Each structure stands twice: as structure tokens, then as C-alpha cells.
Length: 135
Image (cartoon, rainbow, N blue to C red; front, top):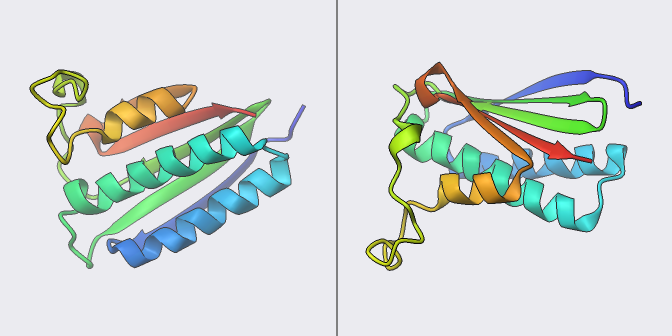
């Protein structure tokens, strides 16, 4: 059994801050011995969630922050990403695999997170996304 550990990272709403998130994921994967496939899924899903929080949630406002929380619970690694926006209707997103949406350059973030994580949930009207990965 892996002990529960919790840590939080706050970043400014700019894409330069994504390097800090990538470093957090690298550190977590090294400490918990995460395999390469899970590392790749985690890296894409968590950075996508943070990127969405920066661009969509915080509207690229550098005065706003994104909070990234991490905890381990038994054999699960859990990341929470919270922005300072107004939230969004996560239950009624267009299907990015629908032929009418295939050529759109955005709208795949939540789809990616759903398919790359082992669990996903939204809280606070969509301001917070929680991604779980089985380690």
C-alpha cells in the first residue's frame, strides 16, 4: 500500500507555467514507479486539463492562478486542476468524433482526458477537474 501524500502547485495563467506541471508529473512518476505508458497518458491528460484551465477557465488572465493538487491513495494517483473561471457545461460537450466536428481545431480536451485517465470527474460547476490514474 502506497501512503497517502498530498501536495499543491499554484501556477500563473500562462503557458510558460506548463513546464512546472510537467516537472510535477515527472517527479510523481519517478517516486511512484509509473510505467512509460501511464506516464504518457498522465502527461497529456493533466497538461490538457491545465491548458484548458488557463485558456478557457481563466481566459489567459495572468492575474488568475490555476491550482494543481496531487495525492496518492492506495494504488491510485489523483490530480485535481482548479481554475478561477465561471465553469462550463461539461455534461453537454459536442462529440469531437462526430464527422461535423472532425475538422475543428478545438474541442478535444475533455475527450482526451476521458480516454487517457482511469477516472475523471468535475466539481464546482466545471471549475475543477479530478483525474485518476491507476499506478
